[in-house]
Structures are given as C-alpha cells and as structure tokens.
Amino acid sequence: MNFIQYIFENSTNQNEKIAIFYRDKTISYSELYFLILKIIGELDALKLNPQEKIIIIADNSFFFVVSYFAIIGSGRVVVPLHPDFGKENFEYVCQSCKVCCFFIQKKYLKRIYSYGIPLKIVFSDIDIEGTKNIFKINKRDAIIKEVDEKTDLGVIIFTSGSTGIPKGVMLTHYNLMYNTNSINKYLGLKSSDRVMVVLPFSYCFGTSLLHTHLRVGGQVVINNQFMFPGKVLKEINQKKCTVFAGVPSIYSILLRRSPLKKMKFPTLRLVQQAGGKLPNTLISELKEVLNTTIIFIMYGQTEATARLSFLPPELLDSKLGSIGKGIPGTKLEVLNKNGEPVKSGEVGEIVASGGNIMVGYWQDPEETAKVLKDNKLYTGDLGIVDEDGYIFLTDRAKEIIKVGGHRVSSKEIENYISKNQNVVEVAVIGIYDELLGEAIKAFVSIVKNSDLTEKDLIAYCQQHFPPHKVPKEIEIMSSLPKNISRKVDKIALKKLEQEKSNNKNY
Image (cartoon, rainbow, N blue to C red; front, side, top):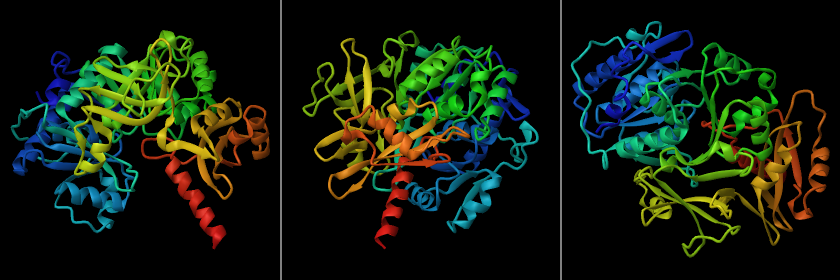
C-alpha cells in the first residue's frame, strides 16, 4: 500500500469536509485529493524514474501539503527542505540525491536561483488566491502508484550531521504508516479533532501532525506566525482547535512571554510536547495553566520516523520528568556498554526497535552502522529506568560536560535555572577551560522588563550546586537562536562562543 492510500483511506465519506485551514482560506478533502492526483499526473508526464528524489522548499501551506503528498503518491521520494536550509546544504542534497525536479514556493525562487545551482524542472505556487488554482496546469488522469511498502522510500529527511554534512534519514512507506498508526493509537485522535500546527512540515514532528490528523479524517490549521504567540493563541480559540503541539522552546515562550496564563481554551482537549526535554518546572506550570487539557509528554527522533515514547497523562505528577515507555509496537530499552539492560537508577543509552525505525542514512553506511545494530536504533541519548520501568532522559552523550574529573549533565543545570520565574529559556554548553579542560556556560533569555543579571543567576546556582556544577559564565540574550525545527540551537551557540574565543586570541 502506498502511504497516500493509507492516509486518505478513512476520508472517502467526508469529501466536502474541510481538511486544512490556512489564513482565511480552506481546502476540503475532495479538493486536496483532486490536486494531489493532478500533480501526480504532471509528474507522470515527465516520465521520471520510480523512486526519483524530488525536493520541496516551502513554508507550511496548501502548496507544501499538495506537493508532499503528490510526490509520495506518485511513487517518488519527497525530500522536504526548510527554506533556511542554506546554500551549501542545498547543494550537497541536490548532488547526492541527483535531484532534477523541484517544488519551490514562489517567494523563495529568487533565493534558490541565486545559489547558481542548475534547476532542471521547477514547479511553484502560481496563485494561492483559490485552492483549485494553486497550479495553472492541465488536469491529467492519474492514480496513486503501488509500491513495496517495506522497501520503497517515501521520504528522506535531512538533519544536521555531527561532521557538518547533513544526514538523510531514509523512511519507507511502511515506516510512515507504522508510526502514524501507533501515534493515533495512544493519542486517541478522532475525526472531530482539529490541530493547530506551528511546527514546520519539513521537520518530522510537523509532518507527523499532518499524517495523524488526516489519517483519522481530522483537520489541520496552519499558522506560520509563532513570532507573535498571542495571535497563535487567539486563533486556537477562533478556529476552535482541539489539539496543539510544540517543542520545548515553544512552551517556554508561551508560558513566560505570552498571554497564555490569562486565557481560557474551552475547545483545547489535548496538547503534545516532544522535540527535547521540557524542564519539569515548565511541565508543572503547563499542567496548572491548562488544567482541563490532556497533556502528552513524548520523546522521538527523526531516525524513528517521529515518535518513540510517551508518558500516560495520568502519570504526569507521579512520574514528572519521565519520557514514559515505548509507543505501541515499539520497544524502548536502556542498555549499558555491554548491551545489557541497566539496573534501576543506572545510566545507559536509550535503544529502540520496531517498524518505525529508519532503514539508514542516505549514502552513509558508516554513520548508519554507528546507530543501527542488530535491527536496533542506538539513539545517543542517555537515560535511567525507575523501578516501574519508566525512562528518564538524563542527557545526550554528546552534551555531557566534563569539568575536571566530573561528568556534568547540561540538562540538570538547565532544569534548575528554568525554575527561576524570570527565565524564559536556557541552554548550557561546555566551553574551553585551561585548567579543567571544560567549564560550564549558560545562555539565558529572560522575561520582559526583568532586572535579573548574570551575577544573580550565578549566585542562584551557587545556592543549589556544588562548585563544579556552577556555570563559569552566564550570558543573557534577548532570545536564544533556534534551528529550523524551532529548537534552541546549541550548535549556533557553540559557534558563537568559538568566534569570541578566536577574536580574543587574535
């Protein structure tokens, strides 16, 4: 079964129901499906090879959704790239995937052409004034193509690589169906659900919201204005959304820099959080503010299609800080260096197995071999298991800071600093220290009009931590840099710190 057949399997009886809201426009299930077939016909006419790689560069929009589903439905492989992916990364993807066909939103055409990379076939949104005129091309007869769901790729999602070269996560039609089915099972999504999406569809969490809600015949509200969080909250009520989802930085901003705490959301029944560890303090705040809303804390990786675990909402207090257990059909373990399950309280690496695990990294067998062993995904994340089998994330192996002879978790420092009500966001990294090898530095953004200083925060940490865990430096910024997935970008902070160090040496 093609993933697109699976997605629209449950919507055949609700053709005129609105599928997607975008600004003041809507598109129904029948219009959406019509446009998908229309673009499949255009792709077929080009006589592209089966499994041809096709790039999309676009904001969340009708254009993105139609293009994304049409490419997969045609039996080709979609490669969604964020508009801010960058010239060097774009060039690498084009060359490694031998891309000849592109779907590029009109507003980004000039930028992409300026890269000087030949673009052989380009589709763009010509006019978004009416849903049926998104593409000014003739209708062609087309069908959803049959595929080998276990082996044929549906998507390649490129993520930041540790060497600076993007890593392409290869996901099959089966991976996509398996994970979508599992997420819907534990969330209990219904055809009456309407999700507000602020996460980019080029990010696996964003596309999983699209997959899961359209699969059950629900509705998607696209909002690309999270830089104005008050407007997002207002539209949740205006559109009577029942579901919201975000990464930690989104909830930090909503709780500390928006009118969230002054508002009521009568239709909002469920919120989802993934994409990193939300500090316990903010989880408790979120639960207090949205006291009639079900809150799902989840954990995932692109290499696992999207989700790997969830914490049952009724355990939010008793297991505060836990990422829960594996989602239905996925086994999650914490293993020591010998590949054995750790004892309760011992730190080990989080390892996953199931039908949602990627088939590997695109043209990178070396990196693939590092994370896929014996049909298991070694996540690189460290965690402990309590006596009831619930997993608690301690840190990423690469983000442990070695201060002298001590191993310090950046998450522990971040969690504590986040307890300060004047703090919006915090990110902790290791910086060079001539005596200790590494020292701790925290980057912090604070609430508007706060007079909190770096010295105040260092004193705050000294009250709680032994000397080796107290940040050597704290830098207050107006806001912390974000990557294309809206997560706090520690790589950017490390580069910033390196530049400062180079300037000092110079």
